[in-house]
Each structure stands twice: as C-alpha cells, then as structure tokens.
Image 1 (cartoon, rainbow, N blue to C red):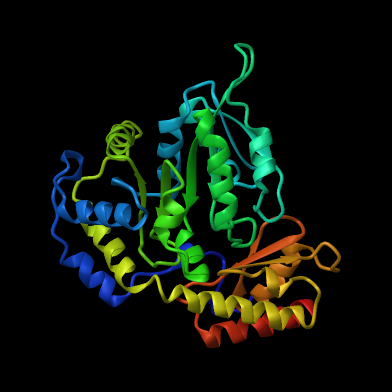
Image 2: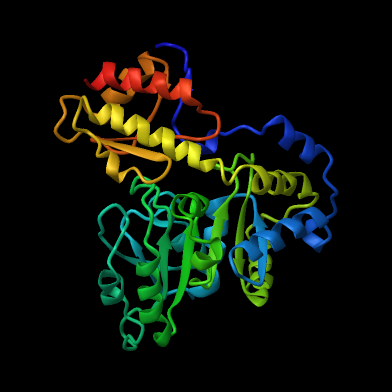
Length: 345
C-alpha cells in the first residue's frame, strides 16, 4: 500500500490550524458544570443566535447532542420517525433505544430527501391506547448517507405545517447544516427556526477538534444540561474546546464552498470515465460512488484507492464514500482523481 497522501475518509479528520490552537491556548475558562465557563457561554449564545433559538448547550460529540435533543421530546415507549438511513438510527449505536427507551419507525427516501407526504403519512400522533404515538419527527440536513444531499426548505416548511397542529415536535440533525447554508445561501435561522431543537457539529468541515452544540428554548436547554450531566458528559474547563468552535465560526464557514467545488470537480472527472457517480447529485462535500454495476466491489475499490495513496470509506458492499474537508486542497483532489481513474476506469 502507498502511504496515505489524501485522506477522504471523513471530514471529522480535520486538524486544528495554528490560529485555532492559539485561540484554544488563550481561552478564558471556568467550571462549565457550574455554568461558569465564559467561553462556553459565548459559543452557546452565538450558535443559538445563528439558528434562531433562545439558548444552546455545548456537547463533546454530535451523537450526544442528537440524543439529548431526542430525549427532550420523546418519552420512553413513544416513537420518533426518521429516514431509514438517518445518522441517529444507523450510526449512533441504538442510543435512542438504549438510553431513552425510544422506539422508531422509518420512511425510505431518495438520498435522504423525503416528500412531505412520506413523512406526514407515517406520523401517528393521535394513536389509540394500544398503539405507539409519534412524538417527534427527525430530519437530517445535509444527509450524510444521502451523499451530502440538501433537504429543501420548502419540504421542511410543509412538514412543520403538517406536524405542528398535532403537537409533534421536530428535531434537526444539522451536523453539516453549515454546508447546506453555504451551498444554498439560505440563512441558518431560516432552517433552524422550523425545528424545536437543532444540533450542529463543529468538528467536521469547520475544523474544530471536538464539539457540537444543541439549541432550543432556554427551558429545554436547562433540562438538556441535566441530562448531559446524567449521561456523564459534564465538562469542567471546557472553554479550551469551545474556543476552537468560536474560531471555526469566525474563519471556516464560508470556505466550505471550496470543499463543495472540489468534490464536484472530482465527481465530474470520475463520472466522465466510469458511470459510478452523477455530478449533478454532488451538492456539498460528499461524493458517493455507486458500484452496483461495476466489476469491483466497494471494499475492492477502497483497496485500489489505497494503493494510490487515497483513503476512502466503503459504506456498503456496493457504495464508496469520499468526503472533502479543509485539509484537502486542489493538488490532493487531483491525486484523488488519478487514483479513482486508475482504479475504476
């Protein structure tokens, strides 16, 4: 195997820049379990304002931020409904059931982009005493396993209009909502204001080493703070980590457009030699190669990429995911194109 020259396994691989490290080293800190870390407080308030909500809660991981959001809305024995490939169901190890006694049902959609009718027809808010009641609709934007697809604002608005009269809450897994915002130009608050709670990640394309923020009402975040401590995730001088998040918000949102452009360029180059990707479906920083009709399986393709110094991820026996981020420049993208052509062409 060639040494890994281009790592496209995930945008969680980003490393703190020198400026971010300096901000972390200089951060003003306090004990956040007692609510006394001023840098954490600034981060929480700023993200909440971005997303059109009253308050925020800093979390060490995106999975925990999501699970706290679910816990707020769904009682044990109630259900949430979500996409069949939602991160909260496929990549958080059954946490909603294990931690909170939450059941779930799913719709199947094209690239994580359901129609409002698909979602609302699955909702069962007024269930009989002998059936499980829907308490929450969970959406994901952008959709990880949908290839970084963007959920249209009009779809979210229609789902909200159909669910709100029935008292069904909505949570957004917005780990990569920054990408949707940059790609569409739609304000973060326009997305965020349609949900009761939203989680956003700082440690993917924005480049922070750790952290996500959950936002919602002040009362909801006060309750989530208790559950965060109960789950063992109360943090002390967490301002060192929050400072990285603040730096990321200041410096790394607009540049996500560079990741989107490089991912599209890769898809166009590879799609021209092998019918494994439609460039028109590459909306943000994730490319998924569909090898269903190719001679190679996904693991074989990943091994072929590795022989050329490029690391990718086999999502399934037939699908490979590659993710662009701030540590992947134009030269690295060129190398990835050469590796893909040599492997697949």
